[in-house]
Image 1 (spheres, rainbow, N blue to C red):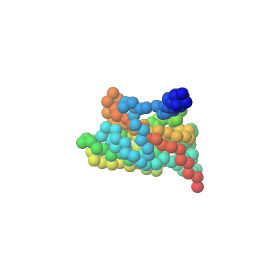
Image 2 (image 1 turned 180 degrees about the vertical axis):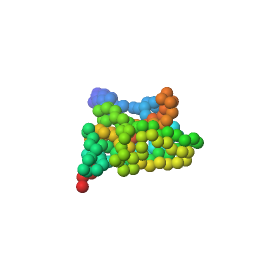
Image 3 (image 1 turned 30 degrees about the horizontal axis):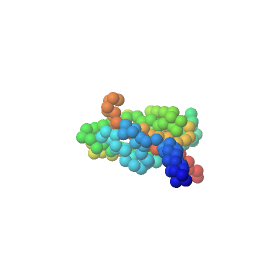
Image 4 (image 1 turned 90 degrees about the vertical axis):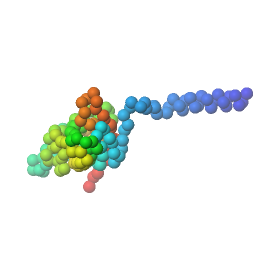
Length: 165
């Protein structure tokens, strides 16, 4: 009788622990990559290298101020395809699932990639893009330049890392 109770407790415990496990992902769920990992979307191979936060940009006498904070994302993109490909504007999503579009003007940002950009076959381009967002953890959504119904995308985890001098 005691062994039967132990078996019942063990089965109940396994059921409880199984219910508390993280949900299984389906094959259609997009994979989340970490910074530094290569991420392939169509012919484009992205690598997010680092992030940096700014309270202002440009000339200290006449700075450009953000609504919240500037988040600069440094990355590289390699075109593995056989034709020139556009690098579409990117977005970030907060941990509260709020999406923010890349800023279309960031001349004061060193190494700014520009807003309208392309990459030739077998070419790699490097640079930074800019977002105006509240401080926090974000995921960068990267895509290829295919039509929306055929577009390939992935996300890159970008944890909050504040560096103070």
